[in-house]
Length: 227
Image 1 (cartoon, rainbow, N blue to C red):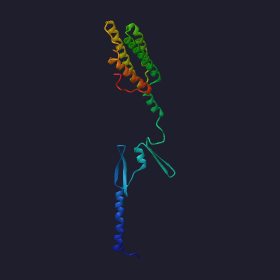
Image 2: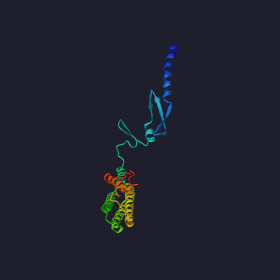
Image 3: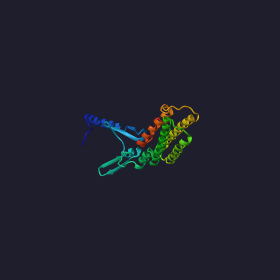
Image 4: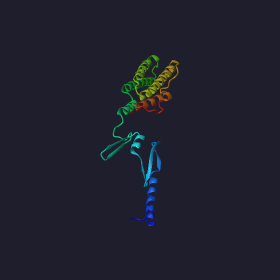
């Protein structure tokens, strides 16, 4: 027959129960989990210095997936899986930042005509040859056609941005040509080195160098040379 528990037995039982209650209390005090800056409804439980969450709830909150295979659990988040991003999106982005082949051909043709136009004007000035609009109009007409073909060939952002500079180069060359035609018509003296000292001529040269560098690189780069 069992008797009543002694005081020592009750004390020992109490010493065992109190820590267990404290541990249970500590394990059940939840904390809020924030994922990628977004507050979630997932509770974080602290136990023995470690944090515990519900994996399924975490996967749902992060738009991830949870799978089980035997004793293996796989948690995958968007962007961390083995499936690569669609190649078409990155390919389209790269293609849109490059010059198209048709625009490159038309742009190079126009710059070639402008270079020949300027060279003809420079030779006439240096050698004192007559400078007439009838003579230079052939270059202007060819450059106008090439500029139109460049516009029709635009298909990428680089094409569109470079066309603006091609048009500026054409307008500057046309202005330079008209200036010397006007000087000749007014019978003013034109020094053989006047073109080398002309700021507009230097601007045309700077823009031509910039456009040539872009063509070699295959992409538009704004450096202020064709303003």
